[in-house]
Length: 164
Image (cartoon, rainbow, N blue to C red; front, side):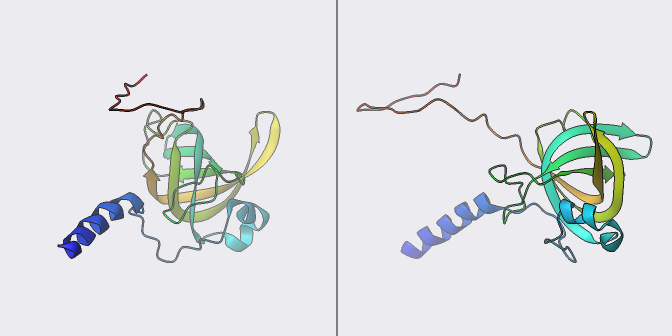
């Protein structure tokens, strides 16, 4: 009986740590957007796994371009917003991506090849973006709103909390 409980627990908890279905073969997980900006000729064509928070989306005639603020990735490949961001990068995707879905603030992880750098601006400040030509994307589900007020409860019995 105890072994069945362990099997059920393993199956149930295993679903909590899923990795997005991305093909990571040949990916250089150590290569960051900062390094790609510093050595664009050296790293051009290398396959990488990058992710972060979407800052903006533009649909172009030949695809979609996302501006992403890069964050380190967790073991599951999810951008870790508790860490410090590194730098922005441009994610070029050959297909159409709906800007409502790929909205600012959403988390995205991508696999692709470093395509060099491109000059642009962040506000009025000149900026050099590393460009990732993405062949695989994973858009993470929207994060639930985090409560910022303290949540302390005292009492005896059964309680029901209704959404705000």
